[in-house]
Image 1: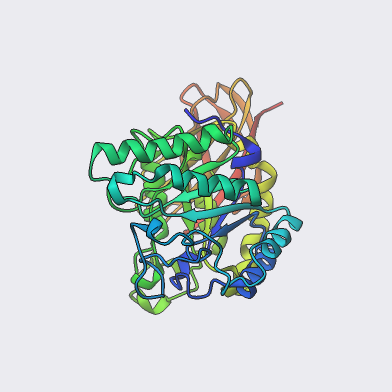
Image 2: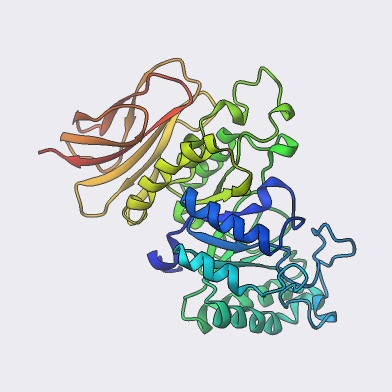
Length: 390
């Protein structure tokens, strides 16, 4: 399976697509402003979404876009000079000045069962060589034959092989028939779902539940988990809905994705100062600890998220008496809960609060590996580092 590489993989991915403006705002001035706001928030990845290229996709605000046969237009995969009259370089240079890495959206040509996969690979290798692209998102894939599946896998294999693993592939598995858990795991991370407040489809507890359920079988580091601007579209949800996105603090939403591969699914320039000030501290703390978190074995703990559970994740550092845990109190009536943490031997353990609610505490753990947690308010979380004590 794909080797974890902190230099390539430890980043907070950013996509403006979550605000549903599609490619309508993609142009030089907008992207430069996004880069500046990204740096303020703490996002360390610049992602050129659909719209960076001259050819329009079927998802574009421009009519007549394509999902297939892009190679009928030889300049389809060149930079859009109307939107970027100075090329992509000024935006990339600004992102790099803030320590950002570069990623691109790409839709392989499906015509002839992806028979043009080598041409697609050539484009992507060119982006890597010219812009030092470190990640590419494969989107718009629809597999209808085994030949098509084989050709898509050849394209991904070639990208990893030709770049010696320097380019990671993000596989959008949010729709259609696409390679994912059973055939594409050696090549990248999995983009699980498109969720939008515009259609009342984003609920924080269901995104958390998807990750929690899958984490029993799939390494959470391999899953891209979104957090949204929950101040958008409150009118789209019932007024008395206790689990509507705007009921949560913004840092809770980010904490839900921390033990996976978090993705900011919004336009940063559209964020309120209140949202930014809420997420900046937790993002800064996370970035200090994320490599250590992802070096551990990550387990789902507590109950399955339902909106009314005590739940969370644990990262146990192999061979070391230490690790991390994030605990969520959803709309559960009790302010305390005992959770089993695998790998904790009997003895005294110290829990240092890094972010969220709760306080530092020590626990005398018995052979049942149960640890008591306390959060006074509903819809709060506690993020801890634990070590054996003394």
